[in-house]
Image (cartoon, rainbow, N blue to C red; front, side, top):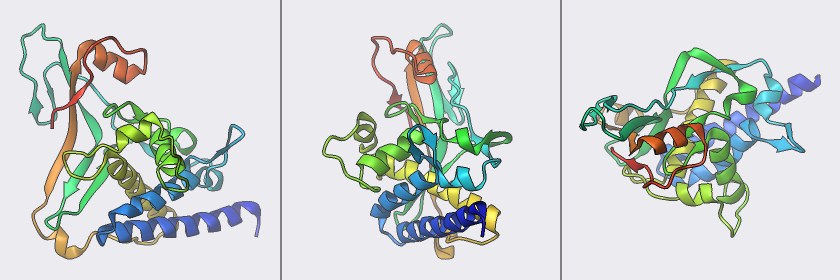
Length: 245
């Protein structure tokens, strides 16, 4: 077995762990997002001496994945939410690229919203911005904060600012950390299914037949804050962004 085949075998085993973590979450063990973050670090965000050592990148270096939907600010509306203000209003509104589903038993899961027509190399995919609330975070920052300091593979008594922000509860109930990690885990599961031709665990068929609630994270902000949040530049001295829905 050559090195690439060995990496692919290790990848298959790591994907089994992802599947087991998701299955446990679906059974009501919400804390299993923590070991899920540890596996996501191995798969997507493992660096050593500034070298990308991520298992998924190493096993499939030419893999391309659909891009996250862009965070686009508007002075009028975002999806189904209308922003009412004068024509010269200073507020802006945007939807973050993920959707939350709350099932009848209280189980909350989340999924990333992707643009299938835009592909991003797997080696740079985790650099994309997944949210600007409760702070501006890339996929890489989400995974490393939870895995390195939030119990995924290590606990640090000095929580990073990113982890402190993500530890806040969402309107849906779980923390931002839980929902972000779960959305990434569900995406990686789908990638594994496509690469290896298997079918992973799913939310129970019984729950899927019952009514469920869909939620999106929609943010309102001062226009200068909106520009700064999107670009990552220095933020002006204005009130922070606030969730609108």
